[in-house]
Image 1 (cartoon, helix red, strand yellow):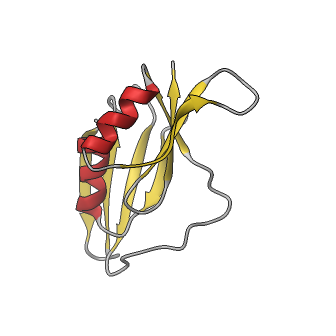
Image 2 (image 1 turned 120 degrees about the horizontal axis):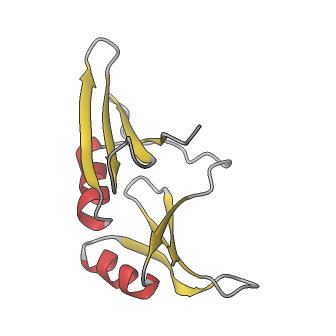
Image 3 (image 1 turned 120 degrees about the vertical axis):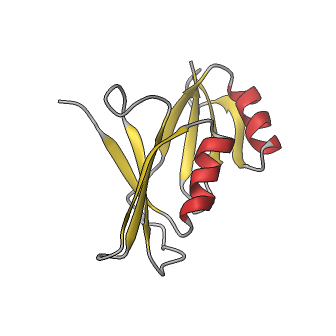
Length: 126
């Protein structure tokens, strides 16, 4: 068994595709439309779905925003240098919500950014 994907509901599919591909450097792996049930999907990731877990971005036609649920914490991405990743993300128009630094009570260096829909993305320095 393995994790295939995590799904995030988004208010603007192209805006989210742009964030995950242009700001976080993922690839758009596939995209589909379901007119009958009024939703669109885009799968993004750093590698093919057959190799690694990816994100499924779901746009429900006509829904431009969602209330953030209290149960979802964040999506985590490994980076080689968290401070540089924050600089690069900021330069690409992304929003850094916690600068790179040690996790409370530990030595692992982390940072947080936010996607256009408000989802938290944790950057964990390898």
